[in-house]
Amino acid sequence: MSYNSPFTGTVIQPTDVSYRAITLTANTQLQWPINGNATDDYAARIMQVNATAANLALWMPPANQTSVGNDALIRNVGSNSFTVKNYAGTNTIITIAPGETKYIYITANPNEQGTWGNIAFGVGSSSADSATLAGYGLLAVTTTLNQSHPVTTFSSNSTADATYRAQTYVWTGGAGTVTLSSASTLGNNWFFLLRNGGTGALTVATSGGQLIDGSGSIVLQPSDSAIIVCSGTAFYTVGLGKSTQFNFTQLTKAVTSGSYTLTATEASNVIQKYTGTLSGNVTITVPQTVQVYYIINETVGGVGNYTVTLTTGLGNTATITAGNQATLICDSVNLLNANTILAGISTVSLANGSVGSPSLRFASESSTGVYRATSGQFNIAILGANMFTLSATGLTVPGTGTFTGGIAGGVFP
Image (tube, rainbow, N blue to C red; front, top):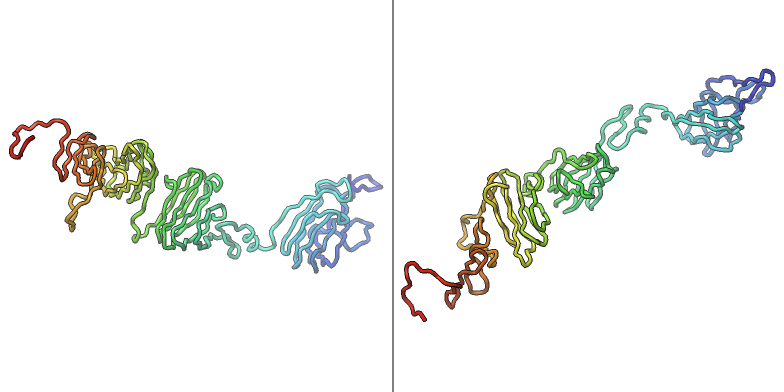
């Protein structure tokens, strides 16, 4: 309801006092500037209030003595916060901190307290407003918002979450890990700047099976740096700077059986270590580019003596048995053994091998070659069968032999 005139029955409109400065020394009840209200504590459309002490309140006039939509703009020009309450101080409408400006208005007036809405204005100056607006990656400088990438150093494993947005993080420890939060949580446009200023490799790992540059993780060597950005589904690096002092990176990949195709990011690791318990032979397809690979086969071959073979999908392949290493040259088609003649050494050592996987064998027939079955033996396998054993006691050739030139010398039993 409204406050109606007893003479006309229409709503009495308070006199529109445009401005009033108020010094608030105690809780103060305001009145509408209506004819007959004998008070100096009247409400104005614009009120500039200075509260001389903390915890003081300004009580608005009765809501049912005016129409809905009646309003007031209140600015706190003092150094203490104060509250604005409805009639008789029953409920708080808004709290106004020093420097703030609030706009209040009546939305319903069935009783003296009524219902009040409010809107927060700026805090009195454009520079302060810009400071209020400044979030991650923004800094208020006088009246403008400017880019900001504050630097934080850290030396313990951490998780990059929403608070990392636009920040610069510098690693100062040894080996460590930064785990990226879910890309769907961070959203499309989240980013932060990362530099490895420490003494060990810094791994940037994803979570939930998501990828960064096509892999589950990347490694930043000392002095490497990058901007890491999120698309909402995956992560990418921009301007990944590589230190010339640390040219080599390592890929550790678990395999079991079957075929695997390396991504460009995975294949960029010169040192590649393959791990896992094999249940069958493994084929690794590398990109058809010129590259040198240092391969470490740390798989467990099991009773089947399974192998790991690298290929480009064209030309020659390279097969490495469990527990062995190889240096390979890829000419974009073939994978070739880099160790043909080793300068500066007089001996070459071979692994023992086995009848099914000789230590010295042929690329196109990996079960044919030379191996050492046991102490004091030299063995030759053909297609996985022992066909020749030479020991200190003599030569053993299983099966029959065909000699086109005859046999001479010695004593035959």
